[in-house]
Image (cartoon, rainbow, N blue to C red; front, side):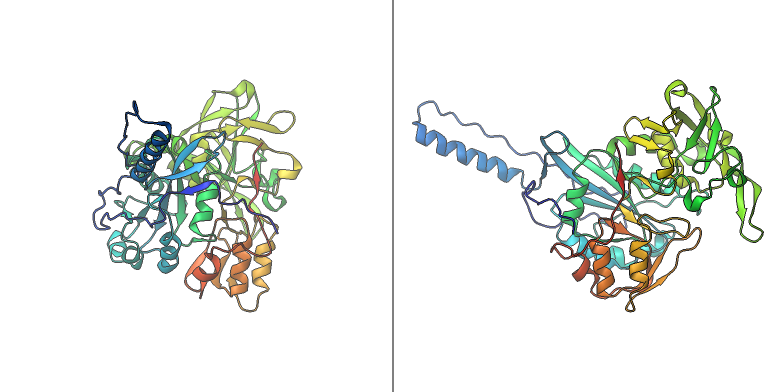
Length: 456
């Protein structure tokens, strides 16, 4: 069983739950200000004795602390010091976020001022009357923007980010922006999530394997053997476009970069891409031409640094742009060196050796399992599938494993993993006692799986 760091460094100065009272009907309303400054006090101790001076000083410090009662201090964040922490939960939904009672239980014990909730709905009118907003009225429902599966789910993501960024940080605060689907549920209590995401100021990107299911062949990808697409550079190297889960955890700097570079929908150029798709019937690739948003991508890798290529110039495997845009807009496409390594400034190292062909890289905070690949060699999926008290829908090529019913035993399997969240949970799924079992403050039992965190 993996041990978990103690909570001593998490100094909670107020244990009340969040008191954000912004209305869900008003999409332009802002959350209650996170950072409230205290009133400084100064005392003149010119003629007082040493004992009296110490007493007065203690009173002054106590008074100052009282004025800062809404602050959450995280100690020892990458180099020491103290930083305020604020988590923005960004939900993408159609007409509701199912299992609202579980999310209510998750946020119930969160320290005051430690989170804000943002929601984008394809059907906004239905969301305004949803159970999620009834149970969590502090949720900020943003204005709906166009969205289409695989073609453009990025614009609603940017809408959420833009509104959250505009709400303003507290002075000196550390913020994290978590994108979540409406089929996601937490696997840890809020205090655990807060602590884990406070350990580093960096963003978390879950980078897909370079070659899932050993399908990196010329037949599949032509001249490009890595991730979805590649492009020839001016030095005749291949720049590979890393694919990553769209469900990111971003710091404010990266969130601002992504939101500003994506821009407004009407100003974003369209391009024609020629890509390959795989015919499941005859087991051969075929060429497909698609018109979709495109953007310029920086090339990372020694002699090719600062070179830029349009996405329209990349060729290879077809994929959804929400799996390409986040990493490429913030960092770029990568050229590996002779050691099959590239160092991405602000992210860390990526590898293209045989070891990393079928395993994810980066930091994966949310568990999911596809037919072509999964995060933990199917350990969690197999354990829950073999539980007679649980029921799952097995993953397909482009749709992950779905949980339909979970026994308490399977819930403990998820809780004991090191993932913070998981998807997909069926909207009509049966998850009795989930909040009691999974969100309990006790330490989990036997560790079954874990999130892969390889950043050098």
